[in-house]
Image 1 (cartoon, rainbow, N blue to C red):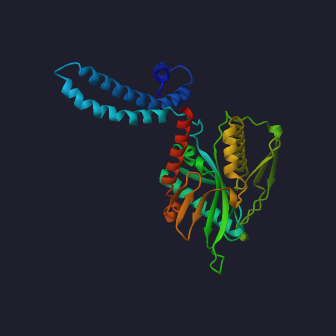
Image 2: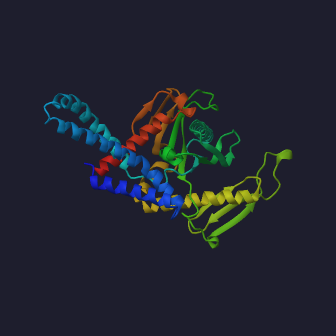
Image 3: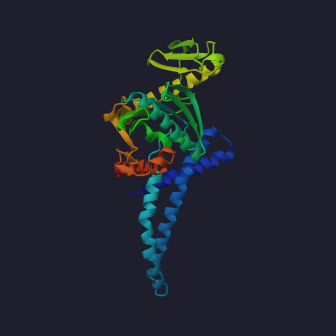
Length: 348
């Protein structure tokens, strides 16, 4: 049952924000963010209220002999709209993750499977790159370490755009692949795994880092050899002593490396703090990300059968080629819908 007191409070808060912004007082940026978040909720409340008013007017018309026939004709159609309107309103009232609108860091590492796991990690990277391009997001690789066969030892990417974390946060976990590796001459199917962690980007106000808690080392970046080898000490490694977190960046500019490494460090510390505050989320993320072992999978990509299965929601798609090309909307939408259903059940 929807609380009308709560709907009134939300509407009044929205009207207050609107008046405050018109006056030009207070923190305009903060007011604007809250106003933008509440606007679709208030619009849904207004639509719901209009439907209730229409039903009330039609019911009142039943007492008027001249209008009764018209009311009897309109009422079934109006009442039929009510469940859908209530469901739509409930969705807008669900608790919001404050980080949903933020950019994100995607970290991908090979797990079980050696060279094949590293190659699959590269496939996942390209999958997320293509998905980001389709969404109109900016996808920037800020740390990239390759194996000799062209696979990935580790990659960190920064993704910017509308609703990035909201769309990508359910990608965190162990991704398992079943296929015949290019290095396999006998045609046998191998099983490998790679881990994906999607972290909301930290803002300066989220994390304050004491410089005394940092150890910063500069290292010689590894190059491609020959005339392209980087002979300057430009790579930066930052160790956060209290947490033990170590981040590196190996761009050509030492100054830029320090900026990148600090941003990655803040993001990881922010994620730790989110996990600490929300113990349920912490347990969920630990179960998802794990160690990269095959038994801790959230999703399987089976190339011989052309299927992708997300084990959390028992969804199987026989369109693996499209998925690997970045066509992820169907599975991401299903994961979001499942999450919303869980939140609705908790509210009820």
